[in-house]
Image (cartoon, rainbow, N blue to C red):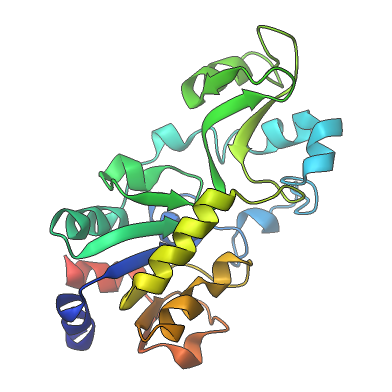
Length: 240
């Protein structure tokens, strides 16, 4: 742990890269872990975030994610979110790049966030573009299975990037730019298997930086890490 503290203290441009593993400490399932969202008997991982299936059967997404995405207002940031926000305030972490869609980094007070897989904070009508906030959608789906546009009756979709959609080019370009500038990347709770996000640490490495991995399961880049830890809570209690 002393080496990790030293790396953070000596870093001039530290970037954090976070995955679903950090949110398990807030009571939110990850996706691919042994008790992950995709392991639930009632979830088909090939349908839940698949664009074509959403277009034809939107009730599947809204019903299955009701107690996963649309209850995050009941969840609180954990020690990882809070310490990252504090490190940002102290100027030690410049940017948080996240794969997560639970908005807990914002809730913890982090300001500079790149959400590479989108966010449910906003939803848009696929027909006329009318915008809806997260709170408005939560209110609608408490009464109806699917939100339809109050203006034109079109289907309303979250601003989450579904499989079959192009990633947000601006977000990805920013993430690559920040990863390339980083002399240290903290990779936290990510299995590093979903591309192109999983390649971001390589931009850090290619430009002479180092990365540290904290994840409870092996990742494809473990062998390249400067340090490797398993327990997020243990590491961040020490860092706090």
